[in-house]
Amino acid sequence: MEKLIQRFQALLAATDTSFLRYSYQSIDWNDRMTAIIGARGIGKTTLLLQHIKLNLSTKETLYVSADDFYFAEHRLLDFAEEFHKMGGKYLFVDEIHKYIGWSKEMKLIYDYLPNLHITFTGSSILDIFKGTDDLSRRVLLYRMHGMSFREYLNMHYHLDLPAYSLEQILNQEVGNTHIEFPLAAFKEYLKNGYYPFANQGNYEERLLQIINTVLETDIPLFARLNASTAIKMKRLMAILAQSVPFKPNYSKLAEIIGIDRQTLSDYITYIEKAGLLKQLYDETKGVRGLGKVTKLYLENTNLAYVLGKDTPDIGNLRETFFFNQLAVMYEVAASSQSDFQVDGYTFEIGGRNKGNAQIQGLDKAYVVKDDIEYGFGNTIPLWHFGFLY
Image (cartoon, rainbow, N blue to C red; front, side):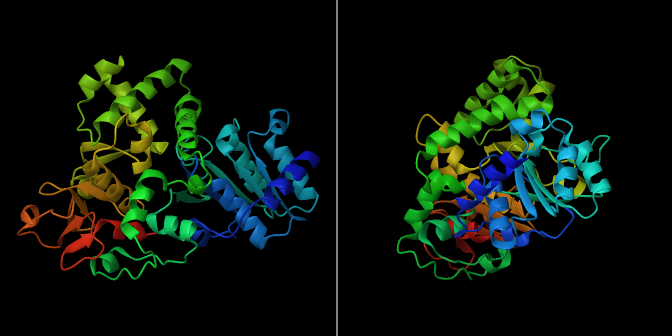
């Protein structure tokens, strides 16, 4: 345990607390068991260390990673009991999905050590509510997403810009960003601003490494798939990256990949849960839960730049950004008359010359335009939707 403590202290000393993600304020850190899940690379580890550094004493707190070699020979439950006996009150376990049998031992830790607060992070494909070790009655779950445009501005320009509700954005209430060229900053965000390591250099290489790890390790480990599966999923991602927004033709796509239709559907579901794709359903999903997938998008615009061989289509980037940012807090559906329907509102996405023809006669309908700084009437700048969280 001594080496684990040393590693923890070294990580804590190197942790910068000058910028905090949106999730930091929304988490109830006092709950007995808290789970934070999200895609690889969005800052879950940093979030834990920042909370510890700002709020807790290292004498009664310990952070560990579940993939540490220590846990190849030691049970997590035994480790937690030993830590508790030494006066430990707060245990943080990172990447819990790397530990075999994690849900059973977490359940036992909760039941056997009532005075120990435990917070753990895991992949976004993790499902803590199913199986024999259902943790739903014990754990408070939070889903963490990549950076909004607002967060990117705050981090990159050292600002403290507030978030706005959807209604405030539609009422043209987004205030002064204190950025001289917000549209230029927005284009930079679309290319390399969704992940918190945007200001650390080698962004494209880091993101490619994350994509490969998700497809080659995370998904096969979770779904218990063989190594050849990763090759097929990478081929699937390459095809989709060149085709998004992709209107599903699962039979043809399955034939190209060399798998059956049901397996293809499973792969797409895994990749979506892992934070690389998003499925857009039609409007019936919100009413009866029977919606049909109308399009597939990459999860965020940064992926389009990294995976695409050529410059991404600007129309696709606009739709991907809107879908990505709105889906964090709202259910987004395809509109039968326009592009998207969100919470009773209809949205048509386009450039500065986009007209109102497709939303004429519709109530609560808006045109969302790229390449404009200010909105008017029912026309909203696209970048304003990056201020929702």
